[in-house]
Length: 120
Image (tube, rainbow, N blue to C red):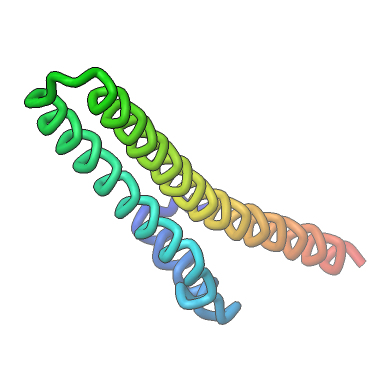
């Protein structure tokens, strides 16, 4: 059995992916979700910070309460964006893991079939 380097395994994996015609274009929804989550996080943090700064100049408690409600809404937007970002990232990693598992399972099946054919 020959020892393969990490680069050899990576090149073989990329070749198998191209042989299976799996390209990055098939998971376009993940890229949109990732980008959308990032945008929501940025908008939420900036909006909450701006509302905090503007609430410092208020002295009326009703206005301060309305600023606090809006700030909480922006923080909720940040949490939703973070959840979208994490979900898209995890989906991307799990998809890569699943393809790798399938390719390794296929390689093991091929080895077993080859061993059985040589015995016969």
